Length: 167
Image 1 (cartoon, one colour):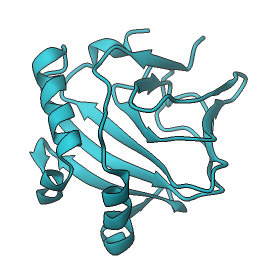
Image 2: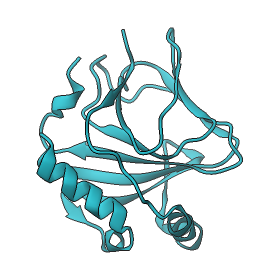
Image 3: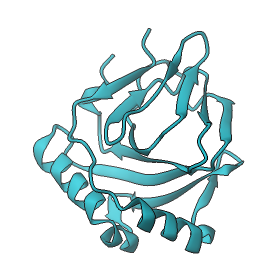
Image 4: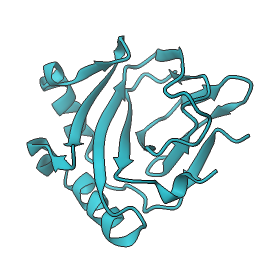
């Protein structure tokens, strides 16, 4: 069973990583720890279909979201958050859901050099910059960032079924 699948949606290009990191460092108190892992933080750019006021500061992401809604089978987005994992850190083994289907949410790589996701009884998967992936979050998995840089991804959850998450 394949636990990670690249999906055919437009690439995310042109994100100002320096501006993202400035926002993270200056506004760290607005980023929430995820799963009690201090090295892993997130910030919602879209929550309950509503854009955060911060979204306008990331025009490449805004444009990408508009393109997805216009040009793909994904017509609306419930949530979209920036996920940041500190350098030389990892997210321990965990399971996010109780079934083995591909998740409705998808991960989009912004900076994922020297990082990977590993699934129990499977292999390690790496992400290519700008591409999006669905994963089996009901399979035990862990994430490593072996880089000296922060690992930055977006996690997007569409409203309704994600047609690209078909097994």
